[in-house]
Image (cartoon, rainbow, N blue to C red; front, side, top):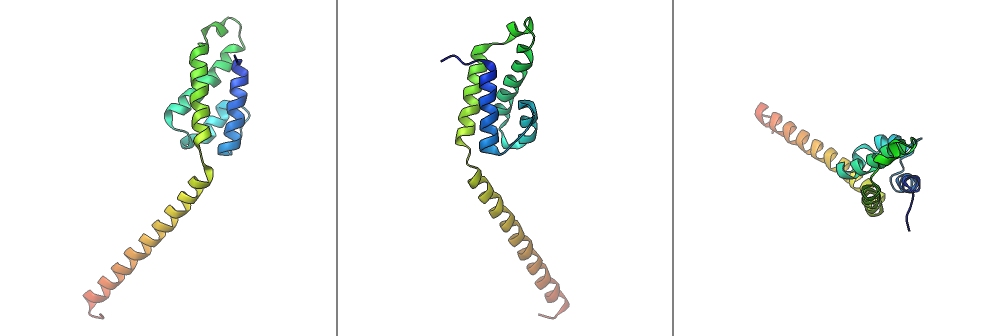
Length: 122
């Protein structure tokens, strides 16, 4: 089934809002807000789709859009967004925070014991 460029962009925008919880007035705004949540290649593909919508608004410039490349970009972005698990990302971020706090406490305790040993209290 052949989709129009606008339908592909609408589908990508809905998936970004659903999977990444990124909202915006346009796909460009959503891409900017997503930032590092999207790998560089996926960000480039999404940007190609967003630029295609801008070109499609002008009939003469609409001829510049490569629909095969747009469909490939749509498939790549949707494949990535389908594999995103936001719960796992949040859990990993929480574990990284706890690990960094634990490391800071461990280093502080070791430095405290070293200072007490040098001064002769231990």
